[in-house]
Image (cartoon, rainbow, N blue to C red; front, side, top):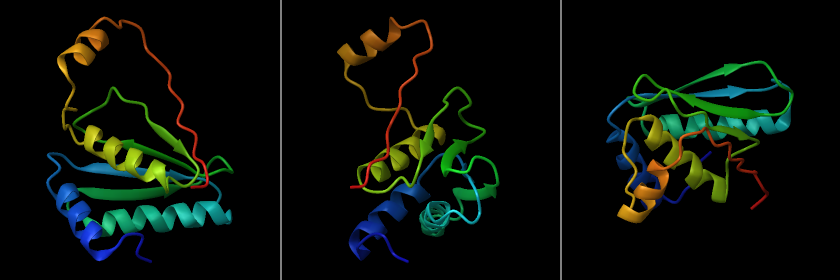
Length: 131
């Protein structure tokens, strides 16, 4: 299944192929859960756009679908997507993949200064909504 128009697919493929480090997507959930099946389809589609920089594994676990990332380049992030990361969450997933590959986010001086003042871990939740 194709999730994007040809032009957008080509642009995303080029962006993913330019990642500095490989990223593995981990899909966790019950194999017979329909949303897990849809999540696996989306993740395998992303991997097909750049098989040299992306891979995925499936593991049974929580009944609800969960997608998390891992790489050798970045180990300090703990980003997890519950549900199918489609719609607005798809962009967040692609941005998370870029972060895990080692790409430094582009931040203005004020934002960087504010972030440098944070010394404790911060938990943020991204809720997947039907968009």
